[in-house]
Image 1 (spheres, helix red, strand yellow):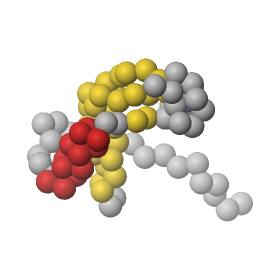
Image 2 (cartoon, rainbow, N blue to C red; image 1 turned 30 degrees about the vertical axis):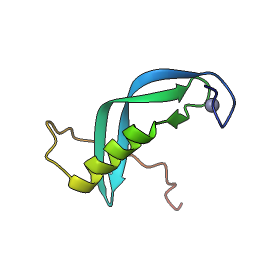
Image 3 (cartoon, rainbow, N blue to C red; image 1 turned 180 degrees about the vertical axis):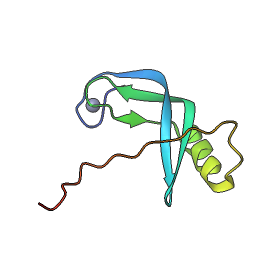
Image 4 (spheres, rainbow, N blue to C red; image 1 turned 90 degrees about the vertical axis):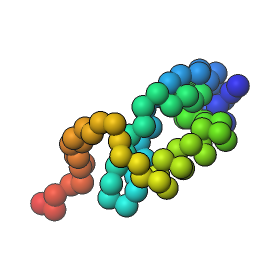
Length: 78
Ligand SMILES: [Zn+2]
């Protein structure tokens, strides 16, 4: 399978997906996806997409929680 964006070869990987729900960020580990080696484009199968949507919808208690530092590159007005 080739990347839709840059047409490079894509590789089957288990990745960590970040999903935003309002101002909440959830991470889902070990998500099977095709990842482009060149531009990083990710493609999920419809079944995986559905699982991710269910996680967001049902908001089950996560088995573990990590603290996520948030940076910004917004220029301060100077
Ligand atoms: Zn690509």
